Length: 253
Ligand code: ADE
Image 1 (cartoon, rainbow, N blue to C red):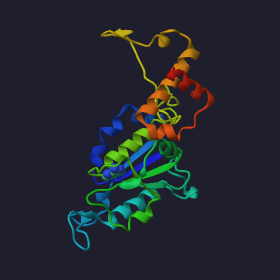
Image 2 (cartoon, helix red, strand yellow):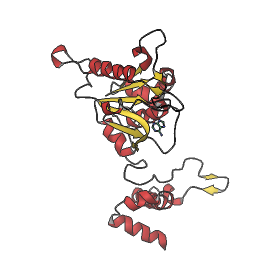
Image 3 (cartoon, protein in one colour):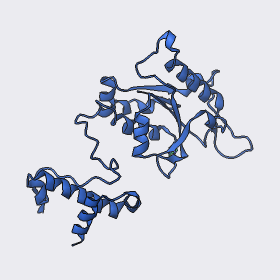
Image 4 (cartoon, rainbow, N blue to C red):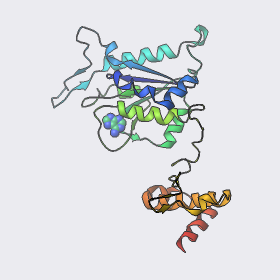
């Protein structure tokens, strides 16, 4: 897949893109990330990307023209007509365009899966006090990574790229994302490694028993208990299986 990022701070992605999971996905040919500097689409010597808001008020607003020209150029470059030959294996269908904004719908593991199945994801990073409202209809959706306000959408874009890249085949070394938190609607069970006893605290006996079925049930039980305690919202939304009900009842005793 291709992920295109439209930003006014391209340098912020330099070291991020060297992170092992991203670099591996790129190396394995399952991901291409292109960073597009919105300023390159702002004409004139001042490369004006923002201006003061109509009606007055503090702060600056991102202008339509550089953002939308950057978006159009990005789509055109990656979605050439098939008779001309597509630029890349990945750009099969239209792009999914997302604006990062605290006003967006909350990001989730489910959304990460949906994004990982698109051929071309375009992430537009907002800045300043916001964007000209005429930009928003050009996106398919607005996404927020949490109820707080960041200086710009770049960190949010990186959160999305990281969570999507690790779902692509060939990006994680052990390829096992199945048992992670959120994948089954529950938080992940506690993990332990050597030593078996650290400062008097021992690893639960069951994990050293070698009994895989017992370990599986213990882990599921721990996931349930942890989710009920830490994320009652997730727990309430989770439909308990018969086995899960039994494991919870057993923990009560
Ligand atoms: N830009 C500023 N704050 C943001 C947030 N919480 N999520 C996504 N983009 C943002």
